Structure formats: structure tokens, C-alpha cells
Length: 427
Image 1 (tube, rainbow, N blue to C red):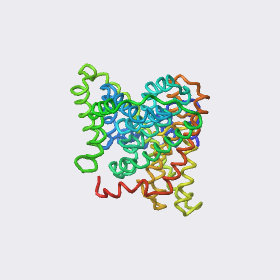
Image 2: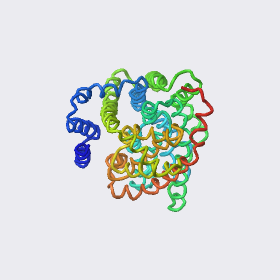
Image 3: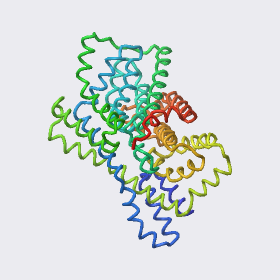
């Protein structure tokens, strides 16, 4: 195991993609112990890690997001937010947060939202008097809502790995997502009052009504996804296919910005994004198999049990550990690698797996904003053309607020569990 650990650390330091780090480390371990029976089974483990019906939701939601970008739905949602809050002091910063909330109900990926919103909002905010680094920091921070507000790719992966209902995970993210968005808005309001942020001109009532009417088809997508899951008409996985169908119809026949010739490009983008995620999941399944063979989860259960018997102390230790590990690993890697280790621990301490899943997801997405590996920082810095050191300086207040919200959700489980408990029979 020592050789595999050294290989793992060396590859991380060389900045090899995490999927290859996991795969190469696992093979190095199997070669090191000269267990060729396990080595022969490795390809089967790679394939079996992806044999789950619920994982179909990942490419389908990615396809829905690509369709909405190509059909102008995302642009209309952002404009809708601007009409209602853009005229307040610091209004475009509020638009940034609300726009990310709308996109979160469609895309479910913080990295994708950071890239999309950085192209749209940063130039707009700078043109209206905001500094470029604050605009990029607001965009990257608000994109954290992507994996929390349903549908969420991280929730799908957690549900598959833990065995809990993906539908319940989606519902559990609603209140935490709203709280985090409200916390960012409060921070922006304070900073706007202190620094006298600019504000946009207020539109007339007629223009507001016209904008609302134009955006109704775009709003139907998230409403139908959540409404269908709540009513039991379709499962969380089936809702992804429904979202694709609605986005296709709206893009071609309602907004008429999407044509048949655009579909191949949309499919290629979906395939590339899906391949990145599924390769990581396959390699992580192999890595988790190696950890299980070495009985690492059992060792950690015994070790944590010797430190504390309090579930609240355990959750504090988990939060501290994940915030630190998020500095060097991205959110998907943390989720997939550590989930097999954490599940026996939360069973040992009697923690609700849905509550823990939300805490785990929020922890991992905060890591997107922490240097040196924070993917959100690099995306925002590159797309918005902002120096990394200036971006980091501007983003710390948002990270502090996100950590406060994380602790609030950790120790008040009802904020996470209230809506799922209302729909106890949901699958």
C-alpha cells in the first residue's frame, strides 16, 4: 500500500488528471502485492462502477443544459432576474446570484455555470461600474448554487453511491440553496452600502410584464422537473429526459433559436462532459475497491469511534477535513473517493444519510473556490481575464459566508430534512 500511496502523491504533485491518478495508483497497488487474480478483475470493476440506471440522469441533464444554452433559455432567465432586481444598489450583483439560481435548476454543475456566467455577467458588471475582480468573484461564488439547488450532478452521484433516494436528495437541496443564495445577497447588500455600488435604471411596469411573459416557457423547465418529482409523475432520472424534451421543444418551436443543424454540436458537447465524469467514476470505483480490500473504511470507523462517540463532534471533524482536502482535490474526486469511506462512519454515528449528503456536497463545492486547485477560481480567472491574486483577495468574504452557512446546515438538520420528510414515500 505504501508504493501505491507514493505513486498517488507523486501523480497529484505532477498535476496528472485525477481520473488517471486513481487508476494508475490502483494498478500500482495490485502489481505491488502481486495479486494477479484481482488484476484480471480490474476491467470488470471499471465497467461495473457505471452499471446503474440512475446514472443516466447525468448525461441527460447535461444534454438539457446544452440545449438551453443553445436555445437562448439561459440568456432570458438572466434578463428576467435583471428586470426585477437590477435597479437596486448593486443590482447586477444580485442578478448574478439570482441568475445562477435559475441556471442551477437547469444545469447542476458549478464549473459549467462559472464558465457561462463569467462570459455574460463579468463584462456587463464591469461596464456598469463594478471592478472586474469583484464581478468574477461574485460569479464564481454564486455558481456554488449549481450543485446544491436541484437537479444536481453531485446529488445523483451521492444517491447512487449511498443508496438513498435521488429524488429526496434533490428536495433536500432546496432550502440549503435558498439559504446560501440569501447569505450571498446579504453580503452583497452590506458591501454595496459600504462601497456605494452602482445601480441600473428601473424599467416600466409594461416592460416588466412583457419580460415575464417572454420568460414563462424558460421557467417551465425547472418547475416541471421539481413538480413532476414531488407529484410522483416521474422519478428524478426520468425528469432528466423530460427536461431534454421540453428544452428541445422550447428552443425549436417557441424561441426558434435552436435548429436541427445545432443538435450535433450540442450532442458532442454533452458527450465530452459526460465522458469526463464517467471516466472519473469508473476509476474511483476501482480505487474504492482497493481501499475496501485493504479494509481502510473499517479502520477509519474504529479510529473515529476511539476519538469521539458524539455525532456532532464527528460532523465538525468531517467538515474540517473536507475543507482542507478541498484545497487539493476537486469536488467530484472528493465525493467519489471518500463516499465509500464515509458511509460506514455515518451509519456508526447514526447520522441521516440525506442530511450528510447535503453537508458533504456543500463542503466539496466550497473547495472549488479555494486555492491552489479550486477549479472555479481557474475558470473565472481565465474566462474573465482577472489575475488570480486579485480574484482570491475578492473571493474570501464569499468563502467565509459559505462556511457559516455550512455550519448552520450541519447543526440544524431540519433545514435539510424538512422537505424530504414531507414526501416520505418519494423514490
